[in-house]
Length: 398
Image 1 (cartoon, rainbow, N blue to C red):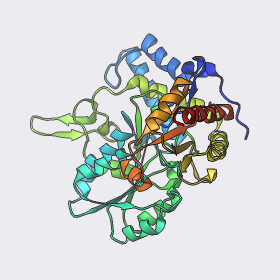
Image 2: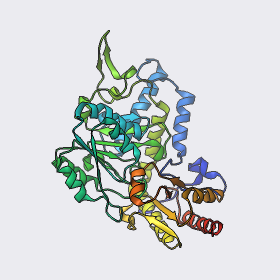
Image 3: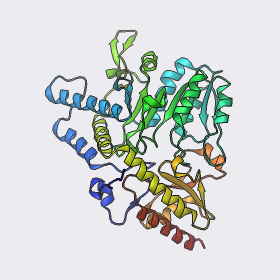
Image 4: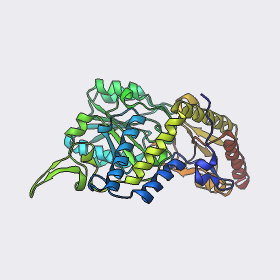
């Protein structure tokens, strides 16, 4: 399915002259309908939710809950199992604290992978249980034999990224879920790099918890999503206390609201939830199959062009069918921060650093890399701008 590229007018920041934005894996640009939806809330029915009975409070509540329904439908998840958080990091921490503290003992095993973002490592370290890592193959794919060996040790939970934010690897989540469940464990998936770029069907994938974030999906910052199996959420104690998450408060104890309200304490990011709803409506109207095909085309072209640049070392598989919409690389003899700074002078915005994935950096044998990540508005011409900028980098450091 051919994709009609959105115009710069749909992404206000892209109207800046000469800007090539290749950092969507960190934060995507916010699409205009999301901005307009939030502006409409602030201008016409600004009120808190779930409390007031006056008309604009009811309107705000309806808009917030309607956003939940649309966000759940976008990934074929249940609204009753869809919790709004601040971001994917908070969503994973919610599971670590609310489910983990109730179900994981110090001698129990939690399994994560060598390619995870720190957000899917540090919460499990803080939980205090034993932690083990699924290793990678030489080309940056998940080693499923390593997974099976760890599953034989009967872990309580397995945590895995749907798409690596450094290697771009797309992991076979449905197959992993089947193996994990056969071993009697639960599966948590970090979908931050997947939901904006791939068709995602949470029910079909079989994950017990699936987390993603709005600011990488053309929506605003400050809004994340946790999809959880209803029976698991119902058995979990709250993560934060106060406000809307209670059923009754007595002097010495309280009882909790049903999920998802149980995990949404205090005044939630109302405008941001409404904005995310508008963003995924916009994405859904384009069609995620078309979004995926466009991302694969631009990524394949970037792999081809970058492979032809002397001194550039690419990380991860060269097969674009197994990759998300990003490419991470090193330029021989040049620190990634210098690469990014020189490219930035030419209007090309890329990310440099360890990408919050230091265990993976050590596996790669480096401390940092440069990452170009693509979006629905990215073009082959912008990849050419990146490659032209690398020529300047090499000239500076010749």
